[in-house]
Amino acid sequence: PVSLANLIVQPGSIAAGESVQLSAQAGNSAGAAHDHLLIGASLYRSGSGYVDDSDNDAALSMAPGSQAIARAFETPTALVSGSWDVLVSLYLDVDENGTISATDLPLALIRSNGALRVIDDRIFAHGFEP
Image 1 (cartoon, one colour):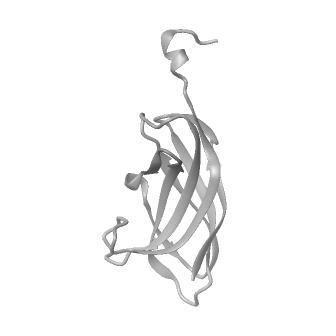
Image 2: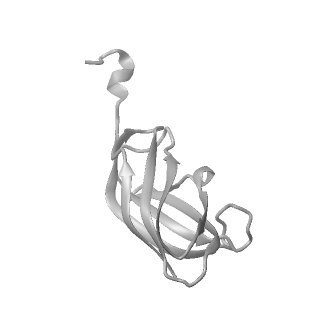
């Protein structure tokens, strides 16, 4: 089995359309390597639902033991401001096509509630910068 721990979101505050770096500690307690894993990620906010960034889902080959993993997440320009939960998952790429689909098997999930704050910086778009 695989596991995820210690999710870090950097930076923790952004404007819509910017990217964040997601990192975590992944563990593989199996006696063999997992050669066909994918790192997925989503944002969630009550009232807005889930936002995915499948273009940045990352392939991962994982030897037994523990290792740091990371992937980028590009937020859409229309992302609603406020606090968002961040979810990172590991999938077994069953069909080995390099993308997460309904065929693939979810193996691990970590969630950090309110870990990303999206700020509305439209006031600066009109020349009111400090």
